[in-house]
Image (cartoon, rainbow, N blue to C red; front, side, top):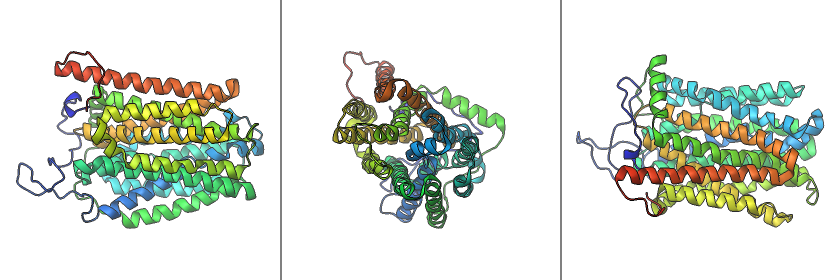
Length: 441
């Protein structure tokens, strides 16, 4: 997945890219000026990493705050598993729908401003969610919350692409994704144990308070951007930028890969609570919430994605992520709790590694309108989450856990097919005969 394989065109009046600097070693560009972007160990990098880590924690904790509680919501509101799954699908769907408009606002008003406003609205709605009187009201609030959170993912990726040196970008984005995994884990673990004692409404309220603390710390810690240049809000410019990104075959492949990975993840973690409450497991809600501690594996795999790419290349890292995810899905079919847990570990590790690799490749590939490029990835990613949550629940209702696993395996096969097609396209573009499917960088 080299930059030469992008097919991107240049849009003169689109938002300009960050200053072009060849590497992260302090070398100079064509103008002779020293690269002032952040690098590991340099000024501001640690504060920036921790701030965006907290933003990731708040985003995933809020976005999936009801996922571990679906069996309790079903019982309290008298709805089926597929109906309750809409409390997850509405949030991720709202994010997918609004991520592109929010990214356009970030091009005009700044990444930090949009991220701060998004978190403020999302945590406010999060404090209202526990008081929802019915399933339709709960779904509506969750949709608004997801739309508010749309300002975070694409803006954060664009902020990193502009403020961090290129060679450190995969690692920096991996840390942000690691924050997502910690948020997803902590939100589910907290809600599981709190809900067991005081119910799902109190549990969701506690997650909202945790997110408030993360939002305040994020705003205090995040350094002011130094390389942001305001872009235009003209619809014609936005449409042209989006069109250019969608015309780029590499970006299209990355968007599809993100959506398919998240289809697996969304389906598995939406349904796993229902499976574990049934025989032969029959686990209590607190223990089911603790299952999400396996998200710590995702924290590790996302933060080491840069090293994976360095050793295997981007496509090699994607193959590894897909293979690990598929192995976990098949292993989770066993009627043994230790094997199910091991399967979840593999699914989580493969997903977060693949997501970190694909999302960082988007930031490197886009030569202009990075926020829009990232927004399109995030939109596809959360469409995959909504689809996985809904289709996975329907498959579980009709075919049990094997039905959910079947949906996941088909999605992983899609990742492999798309990655292979990218390898073949790169070989053809380079004029290399296609004799074997090696793992080009």
